[in-house]
Amino acid sequence: MNTKILKRTFWVFLLLFVFASVALTVIDSGLRNSTTPHGIVSFELCAYTASCDAALIQWGTKGQALALLSLGLDYLFLFLYPGLIVIGLLLIAPRVPRNLFRLTMFAAWSCVAIGLADAIENYALIQIILSESGSRYGLLASISATIKFVLLGIALLWWLFTTVKYGLLKRQPS
Image 1 (cartoon, rainbow, N blue to C red):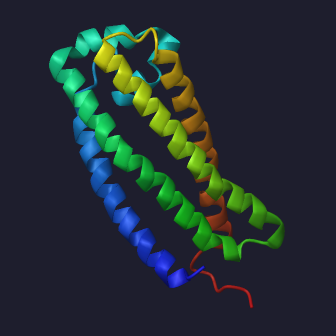
Image 2 (image 1 turned 180 degrees about the vertical axis):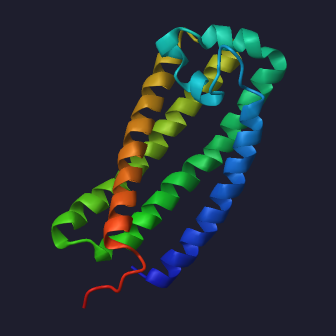
């Protein structure tokens, strides 16, 4: 693994991640209301509160168009944030002790499942908007979102732990 290329790729992904995050945040501000107080995240988990249809009604045509825009942009984003985490973990992996290397690589590979769960969730949410009913796809979206958030939390915590503990700024052991 070429560390120089990984570092450059990391910075490119980070820059794209920041731009996409800003765009998604701006779009998401138009999706927040009493039914979806957390914007698109509330909609991702709408099956658990039986609020999928209520979100569509409260958003109306304009809000639904914003949600579709958000979900479309999220298809790019779902490559960026897992890619950023994978690259971060690959950069720190040579610095972790041998007994933690496999766990670090497992956390990196889990990002494939994170992206897949996000893609399935987005598909289901788009179907809810297009069919104007959450009854058929709401549970699929919410379960996929839950899997995504759990795996994402684990991968991020592991990346944070290994980066703090074995730091990228520390000299690599010989």
